[in-house]
Length: 295
Ligand code: CP
Ligand code: NVA
Image 1 (tube, rainbow, N blue to C red):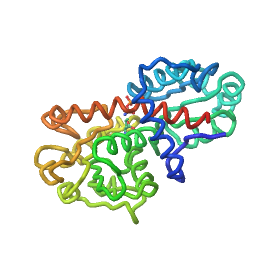
Image 2 (tube, rainbow, N blue to C red):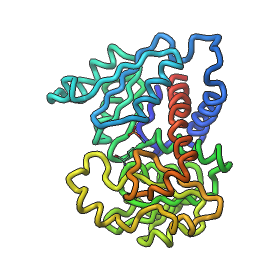
Image 3 (cartoon, rainbow, N blue to C red):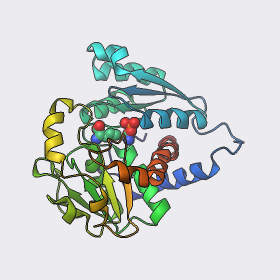
């Protein structure tokens, strides 16, 4: 049985299967299916402790378009929110549904769920990783600029949070260079090999193929918002920073975006076509992930 719990340790061959399936899903979306779909007869639970627009909608639509049925469970509205153990919730779900997609805080909870539910389990974001996002972003980069191998991807902002941590794992798998421009308090936890860190965002951005941004205040860190906004103030993707990158550099953002904070309103609107193509690709890539996992 397969899971997608994190990118750490994933084989490039598996990631490539997902990307190939995603490409096919994008190309054939809307075509009449002649088969019932790879998720026919399956019910997939989405168990979310944190808010979501893109991940939730893309998975719900993907499951339906692949012939399955999604059931969305806000963690606050099931007994999990009242203290029922993850392992007990998992043992119940494993007897009733065919797969689970989980968004929560602790990576250990997703790992434990997979162990006890014994059904394919997907990490839809934890504090440690956001694997579905980064697979989808690689799909977007390759769609727009060709093979990611050897490229310079520059992450600006909180390099200690889930999104850049998954980028760092992806750099090892796909053979590209990840440079993080981040304050020292928020540098990447694992530096070395294909992952480097510099404190100056303008130095980081030099010669970038891709400039990438995420929120300064990740979900669960709201109490630190004031402190973070001060520390991250120089780490904004704006015109001056974009001028340091390659002429044809892509500007991407996993979204949601906060204009005037991690990205200027001007750059977000100027690059909206790419950034919202990136958001759309979440749908196609979720299909790739689901098809791979049940195959
Ligand atoms: N990028 C992303 O995961 O968006 P959501 O939080 O809306 O799912
Ligand atoms: N780092 C962000 C990603 C949102 C998609 C968070 O965890 O809130």
